[in-house]
Length: 42
Image (cartoon, rainbow, N blue to C red):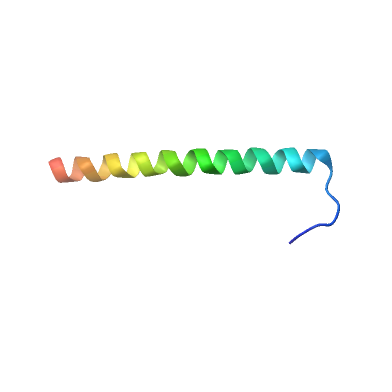
């Protein structure tokens, strides 16, 4: 799925998606640990 030519717009979209993925994955880890903690306390 690799292209030899990419427009500047495609690069920007890829960068944004990559940044969003990193942000959400770390946020999900925090939320998951919070849910696990609530289950233990409850």
